[in-house]
Amino acid sequence: MPYSLRRTLLPVLGVLFFDWDVGALIVLYWSENLVLGAYNILKMATVGGLSAVFPSVFFLIHYGGFCAVHGFFIFSFLFDAPSAFGDDPPWPLFLVFLQLLLDVIEQVFALAPREWIIAFIGLLISHGYSFVSNFLVTNERDNATVKSLMSAPYKRIVVLHVSVIAGGFAVASMGEPLLLLIILVVLKTAMDIALHIREHQRASRGD
Image (spheres, rainbow, N blue to C red):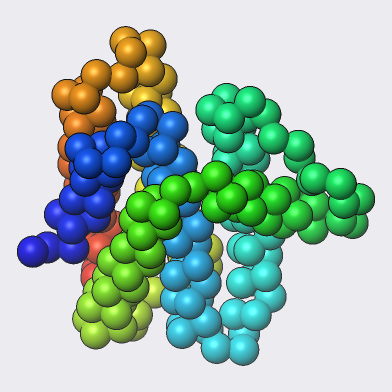
């Protein structure tokens, strides 16, 4: 079974058998951003070696901040506004974005049911397979640069998550019927596959 279809199966099973709602789906898709970012840092390290250390740290802070703010607002709307940093004082300068990210991640995993954790682990494995088979085995690594990799994840997640969040709130406003939840999963997956194919075609060409 293609890995994209396996990733589709995870949220579908959650909806059908574990009573997941729109909130669970959106948070799962948000957490996929973290997986993409982690593997992107691995790609940067593979391509640039020691020269990728500073760009990787910059990416971690910048992309981590993007995910943190994104996750904070999603989590606030869905779960009655968590505190931004718990009881801890804010970290200095731009590190505050990493502190916010860690706080949101902690709260997500504290509330997540066991089945949701299993789905998240499934995403880790699925994207890990893609990292090995598409980036390490094929010629994508040869055509990649640290600079191009730094901007790559944004192009994909912005389109996906604007659509998913808009669709999610639309479904929620209709009472979250089962059929619409499954349609949301299918539409997200279709967009994911299309963007995935486009991304890897460009990477293979070195665009």
